[in-house]
Image (cartoon, rainbow, N blue to C red; front, side, top):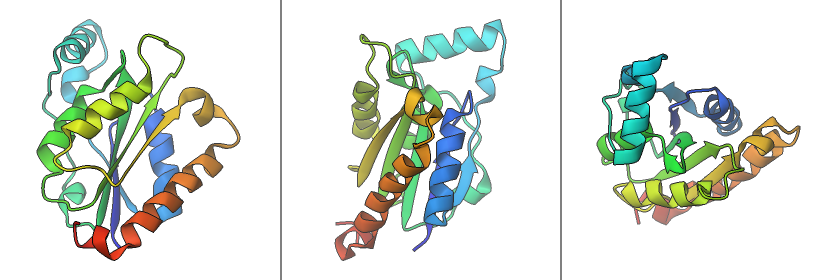
Length: 171
């Protein structure tokens, strides 16, 4: 089974979880980027505007992420209680040709007014089809010594779902 873990990471949390997950699954990885959010005042203003308005900035996706996979796991951070706009761009533009998709988000997890679970529901609703699995990884969990076990549990769920004949057939 060919699996791709494709992600956007701004601070490194999503990259860390993505790399752990890919290693556990024996999957390919690809990181897409968003040059509109270069560090600095203008990049920060563009980020804030896109978060507030639901913008979908242009992204650069490596050619390795455009191949055919049995399962594509897309990931990104939560910003102000919403999925990061580059992930919204990826989900809306690049997941249509894949039958089996899964999603995960990383977040700080401490803001009561902006729960990451809400952002996970938002990005799952934006996907071209229902994800086979979703997961939210909070910063405290990512920093804990148990992160590898948490990622392994998510990987086990993905393998079980992806190996079912109906998942491979897109049903």
